[in-house]
Length: 313
Image (cartoon, rainbow, N blue to C red; front, side, top):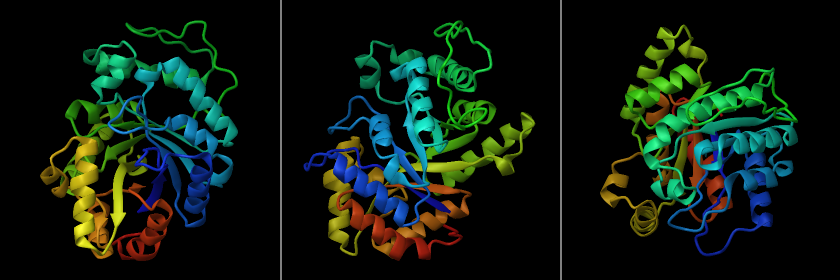
């Protein structure tokens, strides 16, 4: 399993700074993480630094890490505007971008830009086509119910050819997984919306859909994003992170979070949980440290990663 690190975009009281983000990116690169990730919300329960902007700000410090939007929201941002942002990040990073996208699940985000939440699926399906056409270039165009690209040329084009890979997010619905298999270059699942068993079942469905579409499941990448992480041998502290921080932030019952396999708690337990995901076929885990971010990145590499069964990162 390979590991990525989410940029710490949420303000837990200290306030984000460019200096801290750059230090975090340098640490992730130096510790052997393979990807630097940025999630995307306009509105949230806590202050949230803009993801694409933050990702662009640490390109130089990220070394040779892949840069991923996990996930970006093309419907919320507008697919043409978002394609322009993605192309810029790919150009400036010299071709290291992974475009992770999804429809988003926040009605507040949709309301803030005046788009009906009920239209999110249809708009997202079309937005995928818009991104593909604009990032590939070559004169193709798309016209749908919501979006059209006739006469729009994206310049400069991304560094990657024919375009950066587009990984589609789905938390496990049959229609979502079918969309992943038919239109994505990879699958992104969510660590706080799945379990090892659910992930394995979803991967099996995607593999079936890929075969129907004439695509090879073996060459189709996957990742699990937003794996909230806090490594501590203090079980009371781990419970406090779940109860006092994560549950209210996500507006989830703490019992539901306990039923997941998040890497929160003692190192051995975290490794056991990630090993279950690895056994279910997960290739990449994108970790988001809660508090003490630099120390958490180091603790994970030193005490958790070596214990994960099947770890090759």
